Length: 89
Image 1 (cartoon, helix red, strand yellow):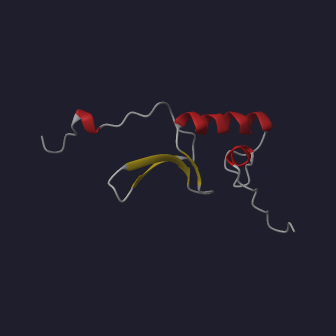
Image 2: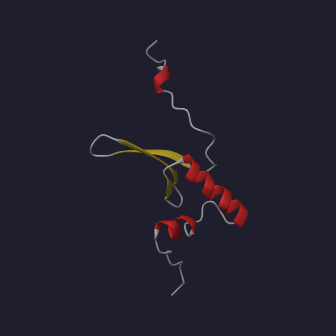
Image 3: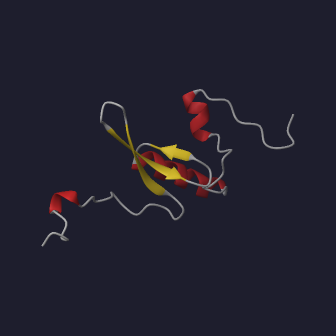
């Protein structure tokens, strides 16, 4: 029975994660786990499922890729400046 998982070890996600995104877990120095939804291709991170899905809904409505590293919606809200694309001055 050693190879059976304890019921408490099974993690239930709120709903399916979009294809290409993963649930990433980091361990802080104080031992606290920090979970985020990560797109490995673009390094975009969302710390709640609701924020990820808000971004996905926006991207679909605006007809932009959910994998775009130049998405500006959350950056404006958080006070970040947009990164320049290659070839921009």
